[in-house]
Length: 411
Image (cartoon, rainbow, N blue to C red; front, top):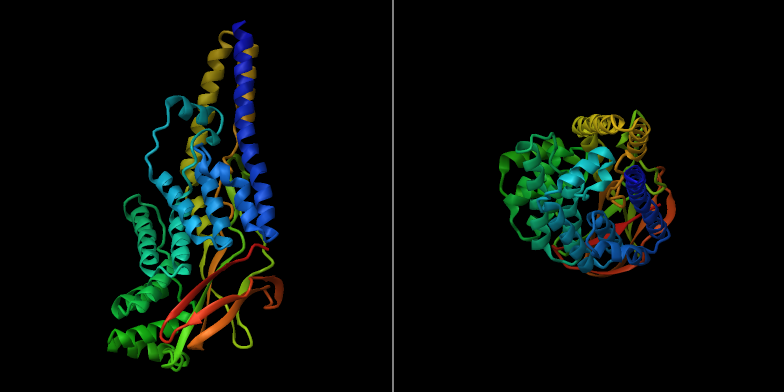
């Protein structure tokens, strides 16, 4: 009787473990299809219940839910999801001994998902974008500070080799300018440049902000370094600016590592739309430039985590052998069955914030004060339109001010 009960327990554990992974992977597939089909609200509705109910997977569903709502333009509700996700990732999680043991004997999917480090950081990037789209500049700036504060702690307190985020510094620099805090704007533009010197817009920003901050020595240096940007550094007196914040493609996808299937590996996801064009009805067009590659950072972050991941799974292998050997001492066949069952159930934890973009990009167009219709149109690697585009948006341009809009592509 005891043997039969034990066998059933092993089988049940395997089924729960495998079903958990399968349910997440299968449940998110339809969500992805809705996003690719241009139906972000339907995508959000598909996973709303899982995002709002307490479970081991709640954080990852909140990530997806907030992203879909952001794509649909419901920035307020999107923020509610991201703020809840941030709260849950910050809570210290004291797993029970049985659950920790289960994760060693079966798989990581048996413990609560708290998010990868790069995911936790990007919660604040998504919040900042939402606040900018709602015109709440101060709130957006708070999020950019929190983002880089997290990275600082990872680097200097947790001793993880993470770089600061040029996208956050760039957003912060633009916000400081809107608030006429010229010196702080210059400092953050300079930080963004140090992290991504290939970003073309930053050349104008450095010249303009150094001039307004009265940093004469720096201004002279930037004028000599970027002579072509001097003429366009300042807006004309009757001009304002429309800024498109564009989230492109899909972040890398987790799959079992080919050399050790018990841990995940990230694979880049191909995208037809590689950049976007900010289009003003009857007027200007401006192509986006990449500020920050989520794909590069995600892959590097997971690569850096391989040593502890492998160590934990190796410990799991040892634990499995110990448990199986203890059972074999009483029943050889049952011990062999337990060992085989635990090996089958041990698989990589593939939960992730799958709807993150591959990159963040920016386009800026200066316009005379007035009302305009604008849209974003997707471009492939050759600069040709892909057919993926946003709806026309009504924007009001004020002289000396910026208007922020957001668009996300999925194809």
